[in-house]
Length: 138
Length: 115
Image (tube, rainbow over all chains, first blue to last red):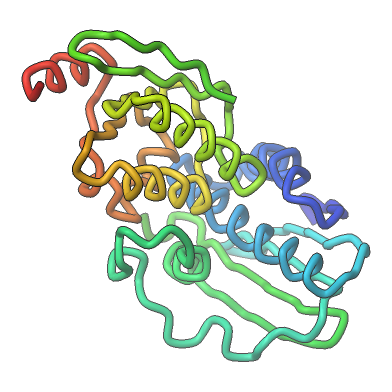
């Protein structure tokens, strides 16, 4: 494992954690891919915090990151209520959304910039696993 | 959260975000400060993002919210994008929604010409 953190369900915490995660992954990914990781993780953790808050749980969100042969993975587990299983299905690309909408871009960004998204919802344990290929798409 | 420099050129108010990261943690406050400037009559805004290292979709949404509020009665332009902030503006097409300039001087010159 390259990095792990327990994050209080508070948006402010995300801005403390992400620069540390980026630093931990910096030997493994180029700057462009690190930008993608940071954007994706900001959106995913924001969603996790919102979900934990709306579920009324004070339990921490678990963030872990590691490396396998040709990719980096990052996993987020929140302790909120069970999320819909189709959360990441049939999402429009970010450039297909109405550019004048003020919200609703997060899931599209996650799906577009991660190389693979795996989501396993469960009551009290929604698990999102993201893969970023080394030398992957820009 | 912002430093406002009014009275630049032809009625331009330059905004310097006092933030390294414009995200869900502060986007609403950022938007509200810009909207307060609009209420004071500052309707030609130039947001200099050169000190901002990261923007998430909430930050983008805050900018769009200000743009929608300005409508046709003024303008909001952006300058100083780099790194992941520039990438975010490209992915979300904000580089086509906003007038985006390389730096502050270039932006002010272009906005003065439009006045």
